[in-house]
Length: 355
Image (cartoon, rainbow, N blue to C red; front, side):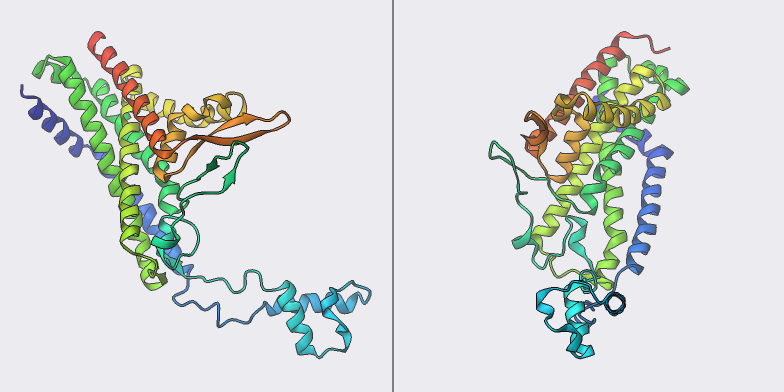
């Protein structure tokens, strides 16, 4: 059989699976609920400048405390506080202690999709380097800290992990793999077509899910916020983050698919992926810190957010995070790990009885 015909057949089967459609619908539903909550939790206009310079309730409480405790020490700049007018007293207290969060801009800034903070010009103010300077002089750049990069690994894990595990696991559960091998007996072609289908299918589902988050939150920026900082570079970065989420999901799909080949079970593969992320992460942080720079999930998270990875350096009484790899090197580590899993899965599939 022609390989591309086989690949097309596998992709048609992938698109017909309910798991992929259900994942997209679930993420869309969650994104819609979050979008509604964000919409009603923000204000259409920047009303911070129109508010009082300080919180009146806070001023009332401080005044009560001052008058109840006449011996309370006041800052030198308050001068002869008791002889000031009430308006002057309130201004002094309000500006000194009661204005921290009262004048915040409560609009939803579109740039929050990519990074925390309120930007007025994304191209000029876009974060470039974080300033965690270490002993060896190399600073760690933590990457984009916005909504999409933060939930990117979760989307990639959900889509890649579930799609990869279920696509291979279902073949063994329902015995369809035997029918496929009757149709195309050359196992290396079958497994290659399946891996390619999982990679591109997982990437497609993850990118659609990521874009649904953007679509759900964009009305908040239009009608309950601002898009003033949005420019060409913003859209380039948004597309780049979405693409990296897709790539990460594809690589995680390959890993999950290999685990499903080993276990011959969807649930076993899903539990193994979850167990590694939860228990493995704890073990690495507590006792196996030297493994952190090589953890594929940690590296893919940094790859999505365009941030550096770190390693732990012993300084005697304490440990400190120092630079390990850039996000491109982190992505390469994730790729190498996934390809290693593909090699393992291919070897097992070619040698083991599928019945």
